[in-house]
Image 1 (spheres, protein in one colour):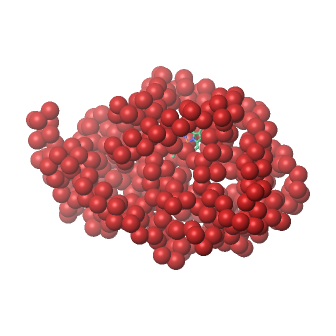
Image 2 (cartoon, rainbow, N blue to C red):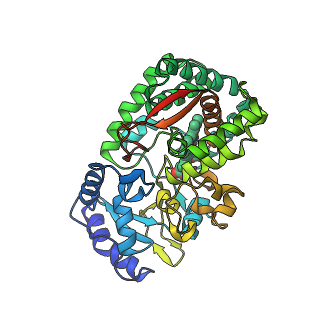
Image 3 (cartoon, rainbow, N blue to C red):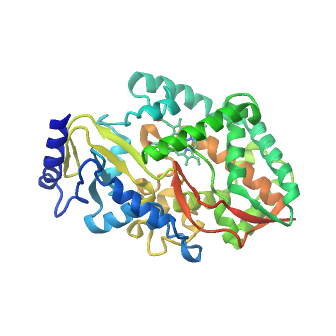
Amino acid sequence: MMNWMRDTVLTLPSFLQIHGFSGNSGPSYRLIHGNNKEISNMLKEAMSKPIRNLSHDVLSAVQPHIHSWTKTYGKNFLQWYGLQPVLVITEPELCKEILNNKDRLYSKKKPNVYGKKLFGDSISIAEGEKWSKLRKLSNHAFHGDSLKSMIPDMIASSEAMLEGWKKHEGKEIEVYEQFRLFTSEVISRTAFGSCYLEGKNIFDMLMKLSSVIFRNSYKLRIPGISKVYKPTLHPDWQEKARNEVLQLFGKETRNPDGLAKLKTMSMIINESLRLYPPVIVLRRKVDMEVRLGNLIVPANVELLVPNLALHHEPQIWGQDVKLFKPERFSDGVANATNNNMAAFLPFGMGPRTCVGLNFATIEAKIALSMILQRYAFTLSPAYVHSPFQFLTVRPQHGLQVILNSL
Ligand code: HEM
């Protein structure tokens, strides 16, 4: 162990420098802690103050170290989680190569002891034969008729949530927690075939366990929805989305075929996922030395694709990158990214892409259309803009909106 540590620490930065890095390869390694202390100090500082003017310029608040170090050391750099060397890659071509994993060189990182408790033997950490079996089963569960059959449950969950909103009409409501419970309830109803109250204990345990894990690392996530942020700030887009819903469905409950026609809503969801992706890093590791572009990456190095940084890169998205402009997605993702598909990774890409993508999108569309049919909403003056990462990206002080019935 000591030898491995000494050899890695002493040789890795110069090794990477020789094999493709020019200049400094990243922040200096510090004994035992690596860069953990610097990262956590930067995060504490960023979290202590809200982002001014409700700006969408959130990279420096959510991942201040990545924001700062890509500026100092370039698009790809080496950082240390304690003794673990981690290569951060933001060059889209290289991100694509890692995530597409054509030659099976990049595997999922093995979870630590807490991660094992949270994910058990789940698909998101499995590899090889076991993963392919689980993936086939999951693909089946989240496609076609099977997915369609979940829609009534999603509508029922959304109805139940909105029933509870009645007592907040004309007043403020904190919706982040509402959406978290809604997502949990939908998953309980559809996947576990029970209602949220039955699944509640499981989710409470998961949340507690995940907070323990998060304190021990920057590594894991639980999916959630956070799409309502944007239209509250942008009444024009809220109105466009509502018109679309009313034109397609009137005040009725949706039908599955209509959901695919919600084009404006898809653009809003995409733009929200670009600015505020719930999952902000994708992690892999190499088991043996590999060539990645003109870098040679030694065995046991972890790779980190910080998708939030890619989503906020002006060279890809243009100078208006920090603005909420759903119209950039009007001709699809390929057009919005200038055919740089790895620049938009809210659900990852390649073989390990999110298996719940369609499920999550349909769920968000159902909830949003049902909200838009009933309410106009604005941000409450109580809202403090301070997104931060706690497994997923979320509003640190909640998301307070004012509900006005239509
Ligand atoms: C807005 C909601 C969601 C977001 C942003 C999201 C994002 C992601 C991302 C980025 C990955 C890829 C991780 C990687 O490459 O390392 C992923 C994988 C995965 N997601 Fe999601 N997800 C969401 C909702 C869901 C839902 C609702 C489910 C299930 C009901 C789900 C199940 C999974 C699973 C099982 C994997 C692992 C797939 C594999 O390794 O083969 N996700 N998700």
